[in-house]
Length: 119
Image 1 (spheres, rainbow, N blue to C red):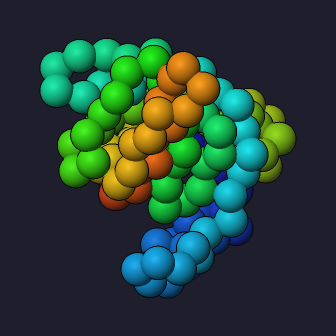
Image 2: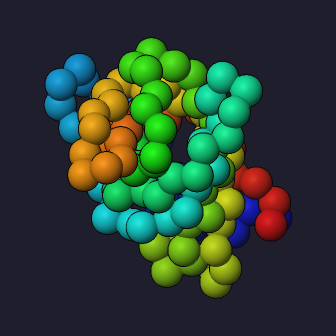
């Protein structure tokens, strides 16, 4: 059962509809979440820096080339989602930027598709 608050789904739809190149239209959540990033048949351990309806910024130990398609799952805290329980979101996207940063890599990616998964 999808317990996501209806208002949050509306926020996601509006943020996706208002995407304009070079302009951030979605609210960012400064969340540090563990993520497994699937890219080119390999899995990378990563940690989010921030998450929005249209993109994600994360840190990982390996470089990922811009343009690469990625898959990952987020377990969003219930208090952020407005739900009694945490919500798992399955996401697909593409890397738009990757830069070396303090012994690791900072990766920025779009979230092109997502679905709310059953717990």
